[in-house]
Image 1 (cartoon, protein in one colour):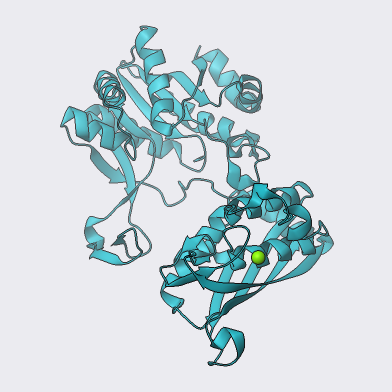
Image 2 (spheres, rainbow, N blue to C red; image 1 turned 90 degrees about the horizontal axis):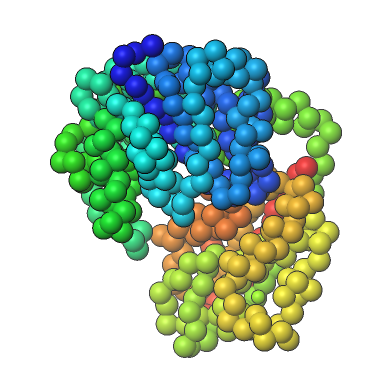
Length: 403
Ligand code: MG
């Protein structure tokens, strides 16, 4: 064991809505335990960690302990080396969660020399990476692993256009563990809390308040954050194995709304600037209505009218994203997953193409699925009929569900 004391903070306070809101991703089975126990085991195998703080959701101690102590190898390392393990309730944000753990170490006068802060949903790092992180943190006072981004990076303005072409050789995607001299990062986080400022990660908090630099070393491409259940190898395996017995259902949805002045044009939850918008009881988002009907139809749950009657004043000017999200949660409860969703919009004006990616992302976010499960395209009415005259928008949505 190193003569310097090194503490580990595992951040696992999030709710994992992308997993369908069922089990937290950190508590899913992996190797001989769970994602969380795998993370802890990998760090403890460095034989340099003396204290662990696991940041967990409010009132979540029972589930957290269950997931953490699932691996017998981890349990014996903990008892043989008298590792102190503590479960700390997180805050509203990742930053406040990290602060709570730092404050635990600081106020309990454990005050380690160094602290490593790691995402609970990154279980695929190696102990070698942990060792490098410790080495560089001791050497430079702060360190972070990073990899070259696979895709070319652009800076985008909020309306969706490119503002800057970033130089690829100067861009890195940072991972965790992020390692710091304990007193430095604790002071920085205290200051950020006082200023009521939120930063993207701990290196930014450190940069902003300590005015010191963080050393960047080579990370590992495997050290990915689990976002979807398929990111866990054994689940991918299970999925393909059980595909033989999988049930598939398609659904179709259609909607049509009049286009009138003094209404916003809402397409898939995105407001598209135009002189007219959809008339309707809710916000009139025909794309989201057609999608809602397709999903409800495929799962035999009903239709948008039975879920949200337009005679109910509750739904006047309602945000259709919320309606879709409510209906989809009901579909998920029956065990359905979305395989894909394909949408056709019939709209004379304005031109849709430049909004496509933004709309796809908005729908994917509402359904908690990855963008590549969704496609959307627009056709004009060739100046024929109600669509062609610019009097309406029509939408067809087709989905495939599986379980
Ligand atoms: Mg409608």
